Structures are given as structure tokens and as C-alpha cells.
Image (cartoon, rainbow, N blue to C red; front, side):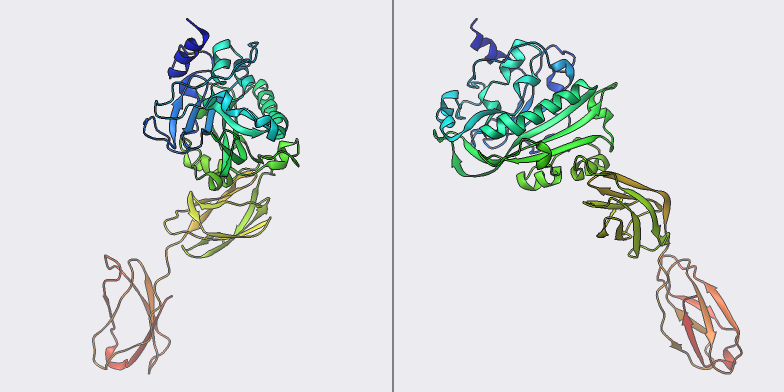
Length: 422
């Protein structure tokens, strides 16, 4: 059997005998950002699941719009780099099958055949390395980007993996206009982006070991041929920003509270902290001033897990509104440096009884009728021909706002009463 036929059979498979880390079930642990499907009629978001990576392939663009893969030190071996790019004949029959010749002439415009999942991440054996040379894993990438800053980030990812970590990686192109390869067979993106979640090694899958404290690196790098820095730290952004640029939704397989932190993280940003908040108790709709440090880039404030509206006053202060439905518990702030949780709890109090206007009643009337919620107390003050005597009636109506009656035992001498909240 020829090498090409062996490769074709490999690309068609979605699972093989499991090895330490390279297995189809591990390559999309963060989720499916675009809702790609294996429907062969889906020309914009066709899902490909392989042992080495998962891809969302766009027949319209002539390239994948994202790739997802798992990386550990066990994936990096001694297999040499493939010398050949391969047409992916396993794409649906009515898709255009991009060839390496379709990239002829890119050198003249200083562009490369850019890997999404890189060659050096799949050097454990010959077949795995050959698989990432399928043209369905290739995007038009500027030479200075591909061979400079992008390569530097790829190298650092392998270094982090060698330090006892498992990396969950997503990357892809973004910003498509009218620019195409000289052949016209693939569109040239304005940017290339990458998101890396660094997870310490341990039992179970990486997904089962995710926490809000994991390192998250997100970059978006201009896909240009001049003016680029070689340092990827100059292109740091947030996953949330990449979501806006692409229309994707990252971390769909991640618990919501952790995903919210990942979306806001900027690598290297100082961790936020909450020192105190005031008041320490209040009703829904009330304002709370939260004091602390490193609130820059604040993306969310939560009262015991319930999202609240807020204003970032400064790096050390946030004013938040106690949200409807919140229960008593800690206050959390999600900022560029991660998650901060208050050491003490905020107490959500019951709403104050509604204000009641002055009420008149006639001499000889035996009762006074007002409306109020369950459990509310009111003080009734006499204002005519009476001393400072007053009494409190406990509202016991159910449901709330059902009228109740306060009996006045001194009706004969009382002409006017003012009812107010205690």
C-alpha cells in the first residue's frame, strides 16, 4: 500500500488504539466553539475529529477556522518533519480539496503554508506528523508571523508541556475580507489567534482538573509581513475579545464559573483581591462599594454567584448593584488577573415595607385598613387629642399586599392618624 493511501485511511479514522495522550477523545476538551457538525452539507463549519486534533473546516474559505488539540511532553518525540503536504481527500466530495500547489506563489508575497496544529507538537511517530501536513490543517500565514512570533509561542507551549503540564490549545484565523492567495483558492486572514489553557498533570482528563487558577494565554497577532514583534507577549488579549472577533463561543465544555474567568484572563496580569465592601448588608437594587486591588479589566461581579451590574471606578474600587435573586454569601470579582473572592459574606436583606401616605378616618370608625407585605411591621401614631401613645401591628397577611386591619381601641377620641414605616 502506498504512503498516500495509508495517510488517507489515517485521516478518515476518528479513533485509534489509545496512546498516552494522542487520542481523538482528548482533542476537543474545551468544547466546540462554533457548533461545527459532521454534516457533509455544512460548507462553513464542517467538523473533523482526528487522533491528532479536531478541526472546523470552511469550504468557503478554503481553510479551517479553528483547530483544537491536547499537548503533553509525550507528544513530542523523534519523528522527523514530513517533507510533503497532502491533499485531504477525506473532505466531502463536493468540497474543494485544496492542494499544496494552490499555495504556489505565496513566497512572492512573503506568505507560508501555516500549520494550525504544528508539526513539532506531533513528532511521536511518522503517521501523526504526516497527518498534520494534510492541507485541511493549513492556513495562509505571513512568513514573519509563522516563522517568528507564532513559532516562538509554539516553542514556549512545548516548554510548558515539558515542565509537567497538559495544554489545551485552540487556534485559528480571523478577519476575512477579499484578500486571497494568488491561486484564489483560500482567503487570507487579517489575524491569527491562539488560546492556551495550562493544566498541571494529574489523574483523569485535563477537563476534570480545570480550576479558575489555571494559566490562560490568549493572543491575536496581525497576519502581516512587516512591523511584527517576535515577542508574543506584545499581542496578549482576552478570549472574550477573540470571541467578539470570530463570533465563536469558547469553553462550552467548561463549568460556567471557570469559563467566565478564562474569558477575562490576560496572561501576566496581577491577581485581583478584595479587602472589604460597604455596606455589609442591603436590599436588592442597593449599591455596594467594593475595595481591593488589581480590578483592572473587571469582567464580572457576582453576589454569591449571581451576576451584578457594576461600574469600575478605579483599579482599587468597584461600585456594584445587588442583583435581583441574589442570596447572602461572598462577593466575587473576575478581572484580567483572575478571580477574587471576599473573605466575608454580604447579607441580602428583605425589602423595606412600602411607604404609606397619611390616612384619614372618621370619628366612630372602628378600624383602619392598610396594605403591606408579609412580615412587615408598622407604627401607628396618633396626631389629635392624644398623648404620645403608639402601637405596632404585625402584618400577617398571606400572600403579600393583601389588605389587613388594625383595630383602634380608642376610636371615640381619635380623628386623624399617620401611618409610617418603623
